[in-house]
Image (tube, rainbow, N blue to C red; front, side, top):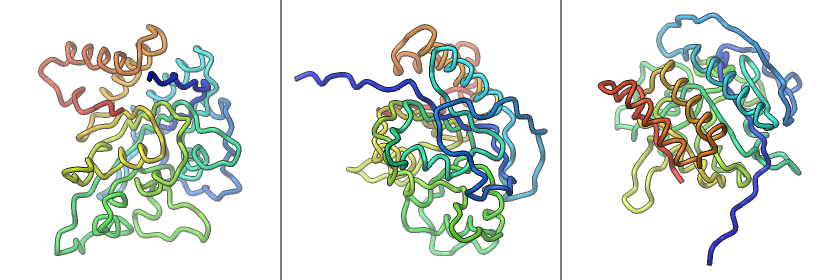
Length: 276
């Protein structure tokens, strides 16, 4: 028996160009979750940080601005979140607000992490909360996404009572309701990694999002370059939205075009995979 194709609302939540040092993230100042174009045309200068700090990613700002424009042209209602507004709170609102369906598209362009199974000797040189993530026995807690304001707790400062730390783990994602989300794009490094169980697959971000109910997931298998990732993602959306390809066909076509352009540099395009 053929299953009926699910109908999705044309809504999208897009995060990128995030300020990992943002400090004004109390719940009252965060925008409520709405399907409209909340923020646009923010700019931040690229900065160099010292070890263990999450760097600003200028390519993600260009990426999400262009993708937001493409989606709006195709009639999507978008929530476009950048700088200090791409917080953990807002992502959780996508899959936890009473009476609000999750968006059809959730695109997150940021840093990701996937720490290996902890060894017997913990790394005492680490600062902040990074140490706790590295030594956690649960693989869903050792993989995650870095959102606006995350440097504060990552470097050892405290988070006020009742506020999120802006480090979104696979474990937290698995408790969201994203059953009305057709596509999640994790435009970040190593978002497809995690612990491998011979019969159960990979325990990491992809497991978290699939448990949450997402149909398609675009993830990465290694550290990906900022500029070329932006190029690949915009190309994928153009082929999906403008050329009206299916999501799998659009992804294959975008990677094929990147492969032609960067024939001898697979690290610039081959790191992303589509999971259904």
